[in-house]
Amino acid sequence: MSHTLRVGVIYGSTRPGRFCDTVVRWVAGQIRAGGKFEVDLIDPATEGAAAVKEQLGRADAFLVVTPEYNHGYTAPLKALIDANGVEWHAKPVAFVSYGGVSGGLRAVEQLRLVFAELHAMTVRDSVSFAGVWEQFDAEGALKSPERAQRSMGTMLKRLHWWAVALRNARAAEPYTQVA
Image (cartoon, rainbow, N blue to C red):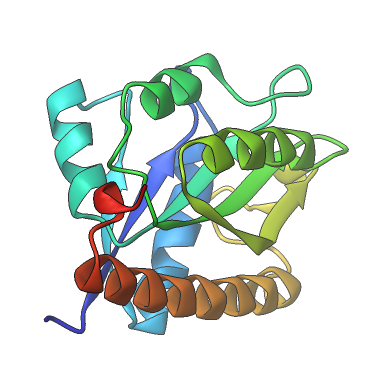
């Protein structure tokens, strides 16, 4: 079995002019710098359902980058999640959220409930950007990255641990056979 783990980084927004692109670039850079995951970017704005399903199926873990719109997560993200089933089973999911005052935390709490129903394991640690528009400069770099980098490092270590544990468990006994 390969030791390289694949993490699917999921864009939670499809709006034109979305800030999600900036946050995803930062997230993907952090993951790649850690060297423990291969990154697949999963963008419902540019990819068809079949391509998304394939990427989800081969992922060992997921990291959802979600904005908070009207105290919740987006409809396109809900559609992406609901259009798939076994692709989520027995895999860990982590979150990076962004928005205004709450930093997207209300969206994350709702997503935890949805992923539990899909037999996915959510990682407790997350990264949240309150007032996101003031935190990144015009080139997409964080103005004060230290805290977010520490939080991201901890979250990625835990996501990696769960990804290894659950991949080994799925290899020992396919989750679809657990009744």
